[in-house]
Image 1 (tube, rainbow, N blue to C red):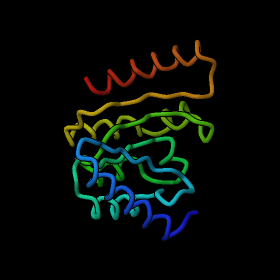
Image 2 (image 1 turned 45 degrees about the vertical axis):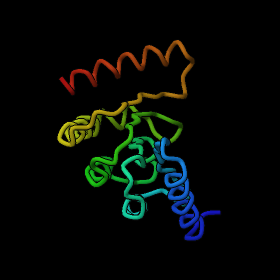
Image 3 (image 1 turned 45 degrees about the horizontal axis):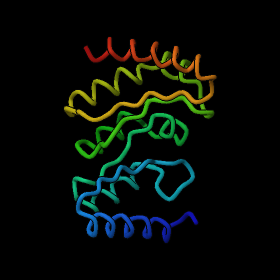
Image 4 (image 1 turned 120 degrees about the vertical axis):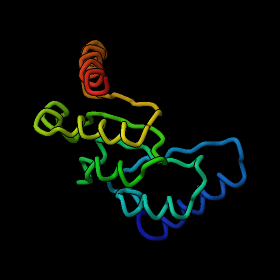
Amino acid sequence: MVGPEAFEDLVEGIKSLINRVPDVNMVLINKEGSCFNNLDDARVVLSEIQDPRFQIRIDTDEFLASGEDVVEYTAAIGDRIGEVAIGCGHKFDIEKEYKNENLINDLFVRLKSLNFKGPVIIQKNSLPIEESIDFVREVRGKIQKLIS
């Protein structure tokens, strides 16, 4: 079920869980085609659920697939970012996207300005494990240069 009712159910469910379980943290992930799939949705959810234990994941793969501006979304979420995922799923080519734009550089500049201290996840899910490990090492090296 996707639509206003599903979105309302999502918000109410998160509120209920956060209120009933004091030692839980939640990170919600934007998902193309779901009831939570854009910056407007994130703004509404964050205004409804102001508890800092509730955060949102910045997922470059999902944002690019849904046409969201990753850096704008990151700036808007600010201190409610729970984690950042830099990935390549089946929807786009990470090398093409990240080489043709300064997306990763701009993202890390924004994260540094927000004093983000959370986890950064690098994912590539379309290669055999051996190639994925090499890919992640290469991307890690590029990211280390950006943040140093």
